[in-house]
Amino acid sequence: MPAPSPAPPEADRKLTLILPASVVRQLRERLAREDTTLRALVLEALAGAGYAVPAAEIRDRRRRPAA
Image: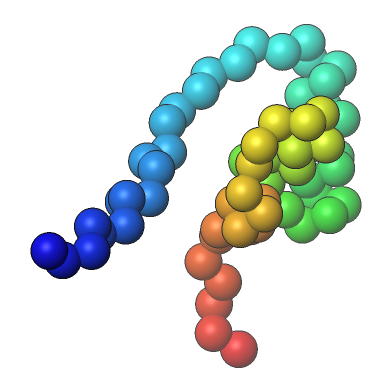
């Protein structure tokens, strides 16, 4: 009997939030300062709060131009 194939990677899901304007301003400032994405920042914060977030997911997934 062949070995079972690995499970496909979990699909991303969209989440929409309404936050205070002052928090959004702070997030935008940090995103610009650290040159990262909101997704990466939120996943990092969730991992820090104890949620099981695979380390490979906490990265900037933007495509960068070839140098």
